[in-house]
Length: 241
Image 1: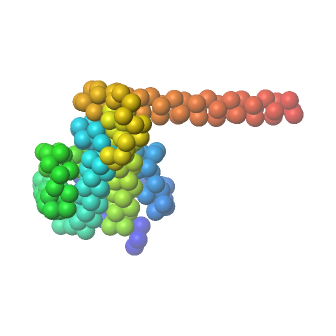
Image 2: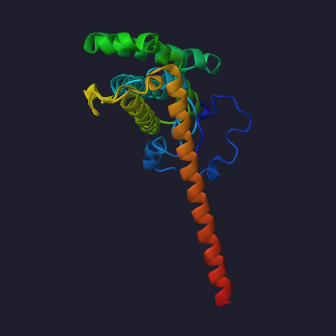
Image 3: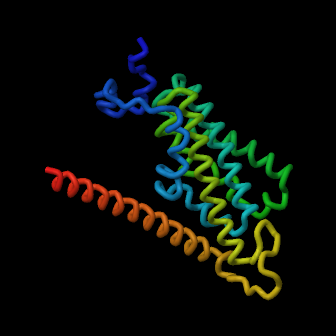
């Protein structure tokens, strides 16, 4: 029967994990994909993967390459974890996930070294540190290890794109303000005085703080508008009564 819960769906060993499974809301594939863009963005909302977000986003090129490498590892590992989830014993699942992730990181590292050696050198050890990126291991444990292949890949693609978007935002702001360039092209001419701090480590914290502040302001503004609209509707109903 299609409604049965397989043992693999309960492999995390959480007591009562299957309770109320029949009452779960059916999630459309589109939601699996788009939730990582904004509503569950791994950096803006979940605050995961902050090490590369702060460390390598001093230029757009570095940000794009790191984002694409992380995207490749996330999608590849989610695919393989979902395919093999029924064959991985519960006791060694984390070690197995890390081994799978490390395999894809090795592939990504060799590809970057061959295709973009200058950026690979600039990224340094942060390419290898993708292995311990909380976004990737977290998605394997929370989603890919419990869901079929299609949903797992869509979730990974959405989270990967959300991470790339955030990396590009950070890299764009820091390079434009810190160097006066975008992808190495001068924007303001020789008279511009770069904000050197923006390409230094403190610039990453400042940029992330202002981005999170802007997101919080937008969410608060949306909530206030929704509350005002609700009060208006209640007032209209009361007047009509």
